Image 1 (cartoon, helix red, strand yellow):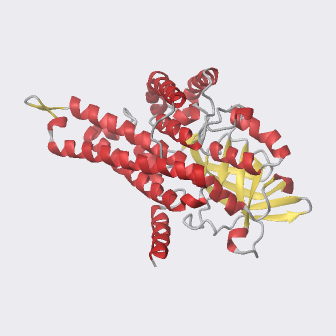
Image 2: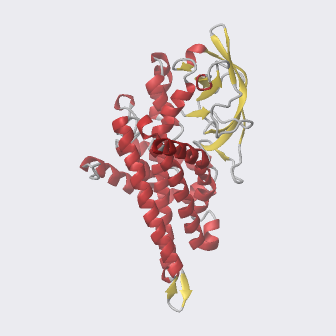
Amino acid sequence: MDFEIPEKTRTTLEMIEEFVDKELTPLEYLFLNEPFRKVLPKIEEKRLRVKQMGLWAPGHAEKYGGMGLDLLDLALVSEALGGCPFGHFVFGCHAPDAGNIEVLHQHGTKAQKKKWLGPLVTGEIRSCFSMTEPEMPGSNPLMMETQAIKDGDDYVITGQKWYTTAADGAAVAVVMAVTNPEAPAHQRASMILVPTDTRGFERVRNIQVMGEAGEGFFSHSEILYQSCRVPQANRLGPEGHGFVIAQERLGPGRIHHCMRWLGICNRALDLMCSRAKARAMGDGVTLADKEIIQAWIAECAAEIRAARMLTLHTAWLIERHGWKAARQDISMIKFLVAGTLQKVIDRALQVHGGLGMTDDTVLAFFYRHERAARIYDGPDEVHKLSLARRILAEKS
């Protein structure tokens, strides 16, 4: 693996890092302390600037208005943007749109691409991904109650979803629903495009996450599908291939998530160091002079570096051999980086003391919203068990 970053990529990263530092970080206090609708006009101004700079949608195809970066370059971009809560949104590479765009690009029909793909890449509209259900274990994606029953040329979708990220204001949902209940477990579900203005699509609420419901893009919704009728032509890929498509989506998606988490780690470590050096403890001593703080900083720096190297190596494997060849590594980075993220944020918050509990810094936001890193896209425990079984099979 070549660790040298190409000059073009370095230049792109430098431009992004400067933009985040000068244009986005100053908006964080407003973002953290006001409703999202109040900061959105300013964020839209920044999105326009990014487009004018030619840095919009780094991971999406050039013919649709993106930069067309490969997975490794996109991973480095994700790290650079991760330290700002809305960095990915400003640059048009945010989840769940990023994953939905990949699915549309790979599995969408010409008609589906014409209607949805271009507007999603350019940021004219947003989408959401509707898979998790409140009564079913998210650790087992094969268990699903939402059904799409054929009626003539249509599907009639009935079910309940929650944690549908960014549904508030989205134009279309990608819904996972059972279309073949008698088929083998991995062939029961399909992905179906459901415009959110379809009769029977009801966004019940934005779910409060540790006391914060959020709004717009920065929210997670509960959705009811009440005899929601859409054409069968809205299905993505062959019937019963929803699970396979989801796995294809989640492999590269975990690279994006992990590198974003590492961007958060870097930001938290920077804040930890700044606070430690500035916080006076009396008699000319600062927190940075305390050995326990020094040990935390050293451990965090080493753990971030190790997690980063494994993540970049996994991206390299996916690019050269496909996501199936990298399954073990994908499982490793999911729980390793998520655990590192939680530890680094917690220690940074501890160093900040009472200040860390407030929204005067970004740490409390990260603490609230990124604890879920160890839950979504498969809980840590599932990835550990899956990895262990593969390793044991190889050793037998």
